[in-house]
Image 1 (cartoon, rainbow, N blue to C red):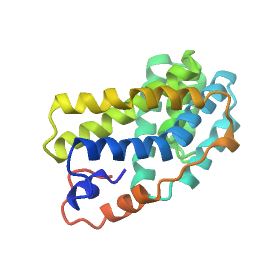
Image 2 (image 1 turned 180 degrees about the vertical axis):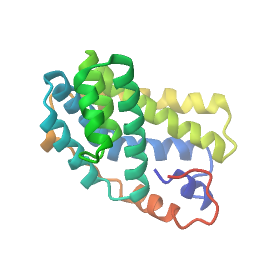
Image 3 (image 1 turned 45 degrees about the horizontal axis):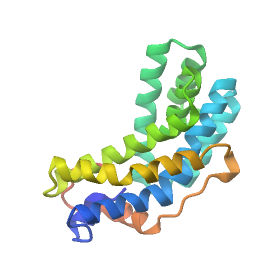
Length: 204
């Protein structure tokens, strides 16, 4: 979410800065948008409602204003859908993967993750928690490669955001398309400026 730019420009310099940036992302994007999308997609996947899944996918595509973020979400979604379809051999997941590979749908990660969970039978709150924790782990893992951040400090950050992840996952229950929103302008600007950096360790 633009962490590399924030580190490079000195806006994030220590574990506290990483934790604050991560919490901003969870509050402003991952929780109210991605986690809710996971829950909605799970419900649609469980009901085998393909039209609803594709509509949700395109809604998320329109909300992803930063090209790098949008492309990364699509790439991760594609991988998730491929693995889930291969492991489960479920016709609905195979059909969704086919729609993704034919460019009928963008295949965003929260949608692919949610559909997979719905087909498998995951509890919605646990699915949202798993998605949020995975997101947080990836961000903290990136931070360990961008700055002097040891494994103990990294685990402390994940421990500290645990209650927030639990609350956001719980808050996502019972919500629908119209409840999805995001507001993280500072992080989006960082993501846009990331593309202009001469040397980059990460693609997004």
